[in-house]
Length: 204
Image 1 (cartoon, one colour):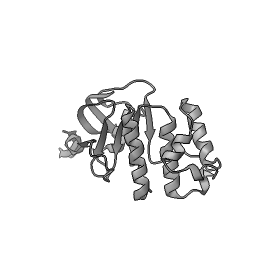
Image 2: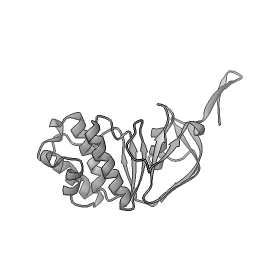
Image 3: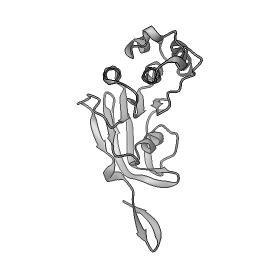
């Protein structure tokens, strides 16, 4: 379970989100919405433990998070299978065959990552999630470079993860086809900036 209590998140020392209190439990997905710059990435980085909350608390089990950001986390000279085997060893996760099949990569398993198209690289980067064995997925715009068919594959992988008791928090601008997911609009939680005596002052 992931639980936030009066959480504030900052970027570059400036608070961008404040007052987040929510719980995401096993089998649930939370979609983060908001325009560019609204704090989606900052929130995900805070949840992932890459930066400390500016205020409040973020409670989640240790060693429970798999975080997928804009970088695919691939080594170009390794094959698709070798890349997944590396991450499976790092996390102590399951064998890679199911991950290759889930993202339609079985036929590309012996091809070097550097030779893959942008969409294929993205699918391979997302396949890493399936070999981590981690129950909490934090995903920042995961469908970038994916076509409609690949988005459907990704959505199916997320749905299987939820069915197995995992949870996911996903920042995305598109409809993933997950009607069961809760949607959180970050706009009401954004720290506002006004001009006061010539100085910027943040408030909510």
